[in-house]
Length: 196
Ligand SMILES: [Zn+2]
Image 1 (tube, rainbow, N blue to C red):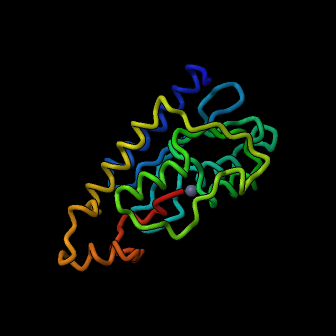
Image 2: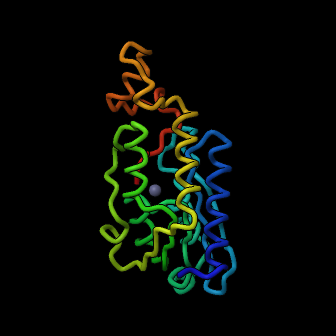
C-alpha cells in the first residue's frame, strides 16, 4: 500500500503525461524524489521532435548522474506513469538509482496498445527486473491505471492511429503502412516505442 505522499508523486506523473499529450507527445511522465521526500527533478516524454530516446526516465537517470552523489542516487525513488522500457531500466541500473514505483506495467500498456491496433514497438517490453535485477520495483498502482489508460487511448485516437475496426483496407496508404508495422518517422511523428 502506497502512502498518500507517494500517490501524490504518481498523480504528478500522470499530470506530466497529460502535459506531454497536450503538446503532441506520447503520454509518459516521471518524477525523481530524494530520500527526504523532496522532488528533485521531473520530466515527460519529448520524442515528438524525432529523437525517440527522449523518455523521461532516461533524462532523470542522466540528471541524477550529473547532480547527485552515488549515495543520494541509491536513496532516491523514481515515480513514473508507465514502467521503464529496457533502455530506461538499463540507464536506471547503470547510474545506481534506487526504487521505482510505476502506475501501469509494460504488460498492461502492451495489452492496451494491442487493443487499439498499435503495431508492436521496435524494442521488446521487458519487466524492469529482467534488465536491472537489483532494483526494488512497485506497481502497477490500480488507483491510477484507468487514468493512464485513458491518456494512451486519447493519444492513439488523436494521433492518426484509427482503431482497426474503423480503418478500411482501402483507406490511405498511411494507415495501411501503420498496420503493417512501419516505424518511419514520417508515419509516426510521435515516434516513441509504443510499448514498454
Ligand atoms: Zn524508456
